[in-house]
Image (tube, rainbow, N blue to C red):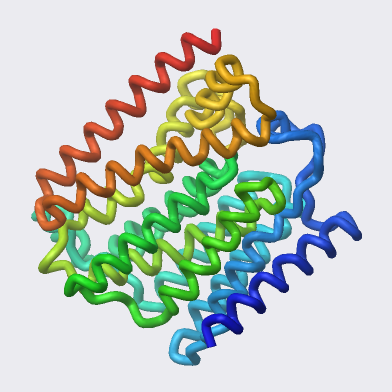
Length: 337
């Protein structure tokens, strides 16, 4: 059955690519500010459609609301990719409203993080909804912010899925609403097509990935909160979260709109550095950049696994990761100048 599903996903992806190219729908815009980091060709932005398809292939009616909200975020991303909702502020407001409804409707909550003051606040129903919704909002937009290099988003979250599969085999309980293996295979297929610059996930893919993984990891923590640190979840989501927060603070510092895209993200600075050092086409440097960042993050995940239960150890690894991020960012900023 899994083989049939995979063949179906591959065929659906090929059809989506063909349809997008033929009718010029959901295609990246040649000449926009991000296009210089790949090449001049239009690439279909259909990754989110395939991710949603992989979710509903094993439809569980007990989780119908999850699929419904995933579909709403897919639509929001599609409207963004089609430039029908061009205002970042409008998208942020719509995201916030949908997330709050999603959290409340599904009784989604972060039960505790084992820090007394915050745990007391989390016992308050309204604060818990606010805090949980804010975390999801940060991950969704952080995922979108880091989506600028081939394989970066897909490889990052594929690594998280493989980590969850490993933990599931070692006594940790996994959420039941999704087929882990099918999800892994689906992201792998997209990873391969994205590696060769044949498909992008687009805003529609970034939004649905951010939402689904937020839901998965919150539930994973709640199921295993006696055996893992809440900061282990923070650790495996540190890059999209920090990319979001750092980008906002950086833009405010230089008096720019914190919600508008720019070309000063870490992955873009790494691309510029490699571009000057290597005689390769942009699309190859693009893919190399994404995979180099993911290699670093896989190492971070590995170190975090050594004491998965320790708050102090997880906080230390997060702190070290941020220091390394800052060091590389500052060096590459001076190099760019």
